[in-house]
Figure 1 (cartoon, rainbow, N blue to C red):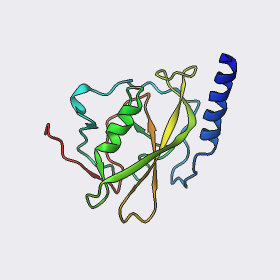
Figure 2 (cartoon, rainbow, N blue to C red):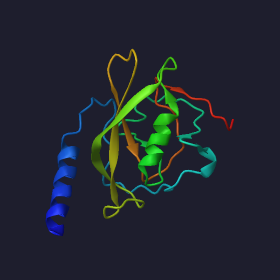
Figure 3 (tube, helix red, strand yellow):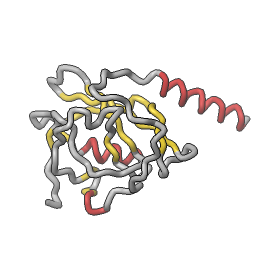
Length: 159
């Protein structure tokens, strides 16, 4: 019975990963064979309750793409949500987001899959958005956070 449940879990996982929506990237894909050597956890000083304290918007149009994912670290989906909760739409609109699945194996010393991990994909939209935007997030590695180009930031009570 345990074997059946395990196989069923992996079948569902693979189905979700393979059916993730595709998006046209303006950059080439990251090299999945290159081992990342980044810290695993974000500094506690940038956490403000249910969101991160982010003070800068990226000028790089690829930030948040498969080739250049947002690296929230912590090995926790809660850090993915903290990142998304720190953002507004371009004119201060509240965001709606839905996790679409996982994809895009890459090597990292912080991964759980034989020195590897998968990115999570979130579909993000807001009232008046011309179309949903996909944001790729790495929850295994941390790098300084910015808002993707075209988004704005919520103010922190800690600033």
